[in-house]
Length: 472
Image 1 (cartoon, one colour):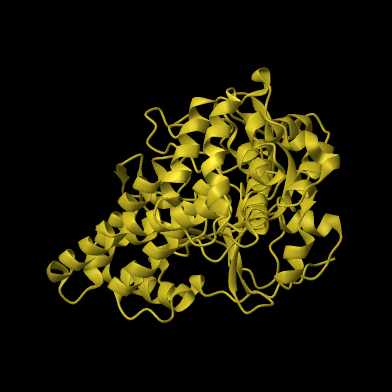
Image 2 (cartoon, rainbow, N blue to C red):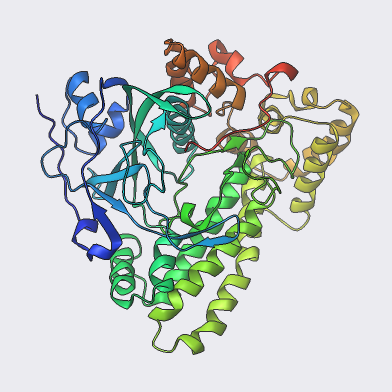
């Protein structure tokens, strides 16, 4: 059986400097582990048997109409500029126009070496594939702009990392894979032809009303300000906010050493490669401003008078913290039941967070507990919550239906770090049931699911995950 995918490829029509064409490397014994049927239907992909899906989404069979390519880009990694990166273990299989008229990328991750692999094997092991599947789909269900997971396929091969591990391929769907680093590489190379083609493609694809590069910058800043505030409102830590992991579309991308807060602390870091806390929870708001400054620099050559554009571009970047703060205040006000924040409401939220930090209160449990009446149980000193709650309840007297707002703003279920690790450990041992159960529960994060109460439970001391690791 062959698989019908309605490809409509546009990136492959851009200048050759933007990518390298090559086919994925076939795998030994492809076996479908997970297929996102609703997403597949939305993309217009015809239904097929598991064996066919496994062949196509492992890279062992290239479907008709695909135009496989590895994209090139640069990036600041932990503040240091790397002049050439690129898809070292991924291939853009092609693009489709989904049933709503949106153009979407379909990309294989772990599909073999590319010209940008930098001595890597181009493969992925099962753990990061399952982590990205679970977290990206949970983020989507929580309403966070994100890439999505279409399929996870075992390869029947072993990859060598710290130890021999089972191989896998993830299929990722994105509005595009255009990154800040994609603009950076051509600006650094002074390749005006490639930069102008990339700019025109980005505007047409994501911001058709943008009037010039400055307007594009403003629109990307707005989306990224909203995105990072939303990350923080659900306790998400990206873990590796390099410029090559920052999209022009405003979607979350690259779920490597990501994690969610357990006990609230603004300096929390999980990523094993973030030794100095650059991408810690509270720092994300500062880092995204820095990343947008790098985008501004890369867009300057597109202006008729780059020198004259420096000042307005700088003003746009310097205004970004206020945008983030406004988005943050709106999101966190909603979490405590306030629809339109007033003067003093930000202080009310900050006071709660300060008390949560002092009492090692779990982030998700506390905020969901405001709705269920159990928030004080997350505090070691319950009087600290009670003192805060007096003013909070008085403030809610002025709000209409605060419970409904809190129910929509505070997930009951997040991809808790210890539950993800349990699912990965079980899957490596051949038991996929914990992964599928977690996947199903996380598809309805705002619903009370009493039968899944164990998946909402905070980790015991021996279950705490201290570090998360990059998928490469």
